[in-house]
Length: 284
Ligand code: PLP
Image 1 (cartoon, rainbow, N blue to C red):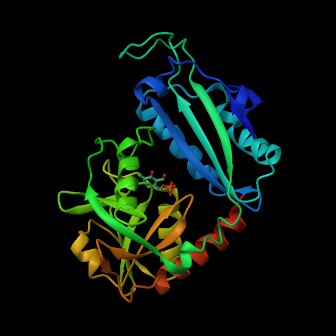
Image 2 (image 1 turned 180 degrees about the vertical axis):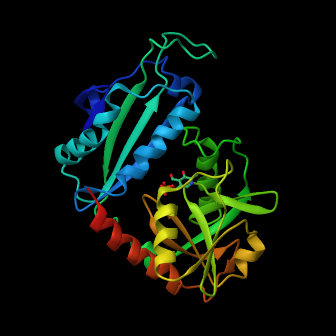
């Protein structure tokens, strides 16, 4: 696989960064994951805009190549012959050659890394036909979940807890309400109304979320951006998650209780179809 590191396209074995890199020592880094369908990037502009916001919220320099990000994405897709899959991008505050809690001076340049993950069949994921099972766990992450940082230990623990319980993922709960999934936004459906938590510092502002809510409104569905509890989810007609890598994925069970009929719901299935169709059309 060919990867990108600070201006160079290298084979993955040759791409090396410092042990003092602040992403490694302090999780002082931000990232984006953009999906690729038919060799094209889905919602690149959304991901680039959110990256810029994450960097600015943390006072992190833009990597030199920021303006060329689209070109770098495209070149990696080409070099690795990706038809369906993902591109991972990470910016770290870089390495000052030692360990220090204080940020390094501005002459320390950020580290920019990108790599591709080929996932043939991503859009035809069979899980979308059967739906996924969710457990709830307490949300123990830090308070700035709107910034897409590389601090992913708690979400990793959540996935492991879900796996141990024979489930696929976890929804995190804070003050009695669902914040989001470990790596996705969470939704319930009641009748023709789609309910998902309002934006704030408590959740990541999903790029897929923004697109799906727009498509839902265009399809005359109602959208309520508000908190909901696990109990409300268990009594809902449908549930689903969204993310760049799962698109729209139906949820059929929450903490052992079947949602609706226990099968993927019509609205989730329809939104998945619309999302995939429209995203392919707009892909660049
Ligand atoms: N919420 C969290 C915590 C995430 O990690 C992610 C994606 O990785 C999402 C939501 C979904 O965001 P997006 O639709 O931009 O992939």
